[in-house]
Image 1 (cartoon, one colour):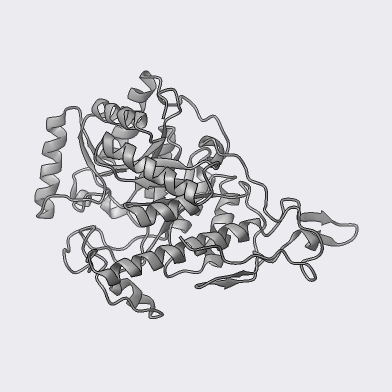
Image 2 (cartoon, helix red, strand yellow; image 1 turned 30 degrees about the vertical axis):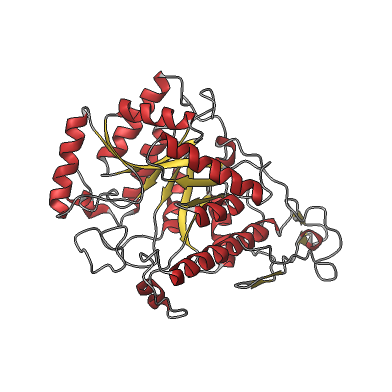
Amino acid sequence: MPESAPLHLAIALEGAGWHPAAWRAPDARAGELFTPAYWLDLVQEAERGLVDFVTIEDSVGVRPARYDASDPEESPGRVQGRLDAVLTAARVAPLTRHIGLVPTVTVTHSEPFHASKAIATLDYVSSGRAGLRVQLSARPYEAALFGRRTFTHRIEDRDDPAVATLVTDLFDEAADYVEVVRRLWDSWEDDAVIRDAATGRFVDRDRLHYIDFSGKWFSVKGPSITPRPPQGQPLVTALAHATVPYRFAARSADVVYVTPSDAAQARAVEREVRAEQAAAGRDREPLHVFGDLVVFLDATEAEAVARKERLDELAGEAFVSDAPVFTGTPAGLADRLLEWRAAGLSGFRLRPAAVPHDLLALTRGLVPELQARGAFRREYEAGTLRGLLGLGRPASRYATASGSPADSPATATAPATA
């Protein structure tokens, strides 16, 4: 990625922060975690920092303390319970103006029809700033909460061939899920709502289309109940750590979050994602590759290290994450981000270890540092999330279809799985 390319920033909001003991920090607002005012404050602070978007974490089960734990009972001692991410984003949307809102949706146990209309509605409520972070669920205890399917293997046993098959199947399912969501967003042409009072026709039904998706996991006829969103296609994002999820993201997403440990690995991962993108036939489409980092930021590296150690002591164990952990100063983090941008990454999703401390360090420390180096915006330059990321507004794939949906529906078949 050339040094002159715009640097994009996202902030991943998770409870009181990504460290399991963050809620016990002196400045934590643990008593407000389930209030809309808390989340509004966080998003508005991120907007003051001019970041492209926030992601809002979600899950279908009570969270385990360790990211690699398979059961919430393995390590108690962190925040349990959460608000629904999509509804939280909808509450925040009218009270913000520029920042993108990307809630997490677990696709393994939900229906794409419901997700499609929820994110489309968020795009209306936010006037074109909505996105979706796709998340899978392979943990047996989470499947048991729904009772509709059974997972018998520990997802952490990655060397087990049965786990590898399960993971591949779940990502294939997720790819079909996203395909259904995207087709439902397109199922209303942009000018389908005509509001012709003289004839009494509110909608031109010739501009509504069946999607007739039929695949291994979903058979969805459509069309959507919600008109095409303001962005046409709200942003689809996904976290990926290895080849199978890279393949899924290269096929289905607009932004993929990756977790390299250094610049050389960032370069290698970016190349692998691009190869998968080309294999999926999307090499001419934009796909952002963002690096994910957990951050502890203070005035000096020693202070950041000491704060992390205090939180580790409260948690009873050293903090581990699926993403690299940066412990240092905003200037040091800026050095790291610009080095990795030169390695091919177009942006970063930063996870504040403790909120509000590390969130404020990002918006009031890192952002001015990047601005001083000419590497980050000084004002929002677009009105939609796709615009902020330099993505065009795609036309509906059904816009050229003719005939009424009753006698000439736009047909579609399931694409090859990832």
